[in-house]
Length: 95
Length: 476
Image (cartoon, rainbow over all chains, first blue to last red; front, side, top):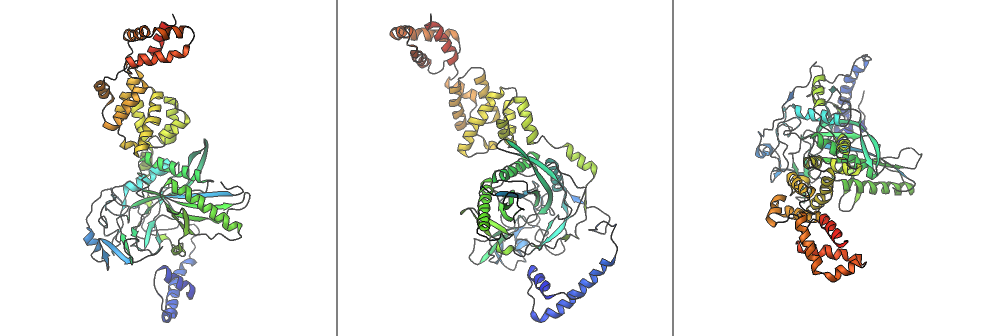
């Protein structure tokens, strides 16, 4: 199965990834084979099985509502490629 | 609203849970701190960080669900809602899609004295995003992640509202219920409660029209005017033969117009899937039962009780219970007092002062105890209602108690008949001509005698006793 060109471009756009024309063929066949692999699941009869969101038979463990600020602005911004006055800064986004 | 057209409105409310820490991390949720000062490695989506859910937030969602007369789902699932935006470091928002924590419910709203049910489709828990500042630099957008990861309850209504007034009443009622439950502070200015409004128009009898969603309305006024603008815009388009495109729009508070958010054209493909970092959330029956038993009296019940216990009118009762702080205040004052007097003083005098000074009832310059004391003095006849108004004004300015002001100024009313009789005799003997005229039928002069006696008493005479005394003396 092949992943068609339109779906590939749409996925790229949603993920903010630029897709190079020259990679189109190989990407489409790679993604196609991944989807083909996953599609094998469709052959299993799940008529009477509840949708499974997690394979562990456990429930979420909850924590108490206690606020503790362990990270400072400096630490959080340490790896930011660009920062300004304790803000992350990014190229202007126009709504 | 616009003749020949029907409006259909559905509303999504985002209500911030009143928790100390975030939904999946321990960062503080306090409002107004310095940029990026309340961000943990989880909120900043550093690689390898895992979310751990806040029990308090889950409890508040259940409480809110109960308050909205809704079904509580014992099993709910967290999903990833994928989209790309600079204030969403994870690249997805953790939300609930197919299996929300709260299902169908309803609330009652009232417009023009008419009561109506509005259906609740669901309530789910989700993370808030960070905040983008576009106006700080000509070439850059600034991002503050303090809000990133704060717990929100998204409350989705059925499309049951037919007018902007109903829409506003719906949001007011949900806000009031959440404030009674203390699950959300309802502060719209700070963004703790905001509404996305879906609007469509159609001709009576026709199918529903295509809807547009107006995002992020944070005041009742904006909700009202955005709906009117949007409905008119859609009607104009349809009447000129064009089609409505289903889209997300922004309301401009300065121009009162809505405009399309171009960037959202692809965003509706969110590719939801269950978050593999989070197991299903399973609630124990006992826990839900415990929460259910801790639900306080809610506005509708309180309204009925106030009508029953304090003989309030429907209207006065609605006004007083609509805000929890106001009803708490009222109830403190009314305890063991004359409800009619208390209602008048709270709804007219106190409200007008608060309005004028633009204060909430929590910031009232007059405490419930002080207002109660003032009312006691009116009720016992110690002061006249005119004097009470003066004292009230002074209480607002100085914060002094009514008793202190009365004592200080010697303001208490003279009700003693013996003392008033002397005054009356004095007035009668010093105005023989007018007494003569009065007795000859010029009964309008009665006011003159009252005025004279009042003057002599320096305004302290109890008007009721004074009137009776004057009447009996002059008519013999």
